[in-house]
Image (tube, rainbow, N blue to C red; front, side, top):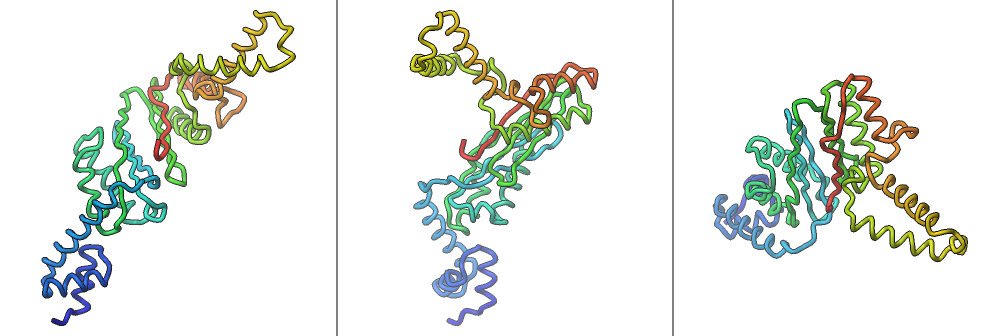
Length: 277
């Protein structure tokens, strides 16, 4: 039977499948659009199953603040081209909507269900890799940032004040975290096993330095501890030099902003998000 171009176009718009595939499906189903759509879906799901083991190393982060909640969703795919697709982005925004509406705090079946039609139409493996919800206490200011590549982001919540200047500081801290990617928030968060390992590394380096041979053990211990302190200051957010004022540490800037607002401030959350990590 003759298949009209208008019917092919309508099926394509309804399913997202290619023009030739739509025409073949209509021919196979004797022009029945509903049956053709079902056939295309079945074929797409079968192909999708074959692709389910493919690595999803591309994608983007989606972050939204609503009321006292900040939702972070990591949506992955196979290629950077698809990560920039308008339909892919639209699904990411829909995932944020559903997470807030339903009060979800982790990846749920509904998230994956929302993604299935796009998997079928684009024919690429995709995954909702992360859903995280960060709540803001009543006495806190929160902010977030996503870098232009959409693969790096940060969320910061500062407790103690809701002043606009504190919120601005929280945003600047997000910029800082995205730029310097600290491994830990503060020194107390660093595992003892990590510190012990670093001590062994620094000690081995010192043992290979001829200048260290004649130094007393107590001096060597002091130098070793100094190296550890310097290293921790480089990897811990609160001890890094602040991105907007490199004469002060983040902790010193926090105290300064707190003093300006007559408040005692602390970080409730200071978190880096990187696609795939």
